Image (tube, rainbow, N blue to C red; front, side, top):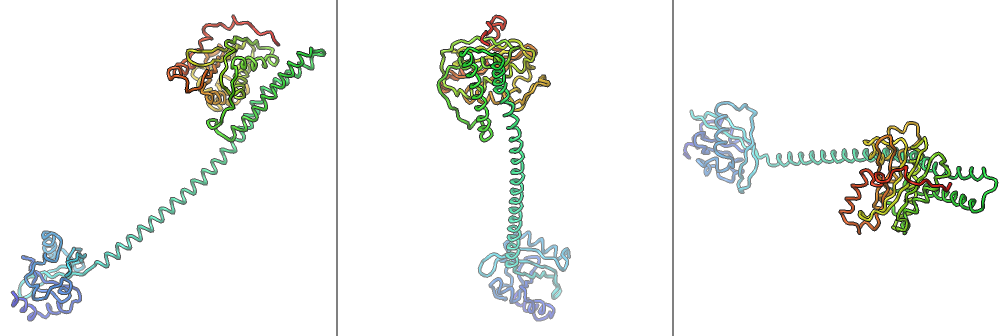
Length: 432
């Protein structure tokens, strides 16, 4: 076979020009056996083998692809399926045994009456590295672009959030002023009523004067507490507010607050059914006073035609709570709206022209729950409303889970004392 190769080199000038002058690695193959019939100096350097030594060595020695793939490319080259510009990539092994990516161009060649296949092999490792580097640079640039886009979006989102927060703050400030004005109406009305009563009577008993002056001072104190509370509320969420708690008698506190409404509301009859007044529990008197003021004020306001307002209280030892109820004979509330009364700014649909903000009961429930108690509402429509306010007799950790669940369940249903004690049977208060 060596003579055959020598003959090829000597008889075919085209062949000699093709192989010997080609700077790229060139290999002549037997298409049937894939044996190398010749290779030029560039191929010898690439594969690390002498020209004569390479004759009849299988081309697969230098290719890492499967033989069937190589034969497929050879068949396509012999059948003219590849045009003159066709190239394909193929992994090869150089003289050091190091894999490299090669670009091959194959085609048929007639030499001495026999069809051979030539292969031009170009090492494109550096080109591949350049491409990979370019791809890496492109991906890095795209990543940087995406990161910049995310930063811009985040900055825009922060700006939008800041703008929304500013709008919310502005709205909250307006609501704060409206709520404060609303809550101040009750103590101011009490002060005004007592002042009128004093001016109508020319000669008042000193004891009565002291009583009325004390009631005025109490109303002023309540107004001051409201301002202070609303200022705190504007700065903090209720859940983070603390309580200034001390031991007090909730029954006596309920009666004192209710009696302060009597002179200012001559068209309403206040009835008292206060029990267990000796019971003392830990509470914040300012917060509890605000709750009671709001509940009693609502009972008056939503009974525009007057009527009876009953204040009841008792110790429910079974469920570990002290209960205070305020019942009126006013316009009532639709059953499906009872729970919504405690939503911020919600007002019942039947309130009509009666002024209000929908803020008071929301505040009452939040203050009650700060004490681990609650405020609930019961009504059968037009037959008035009963508001139930309860506080734990002991610290919450000392109550059993069963007592908590029972207390929550019972305050959401019809109040027990409303069922057992008709309003008409209670004795009216005569201290006006």
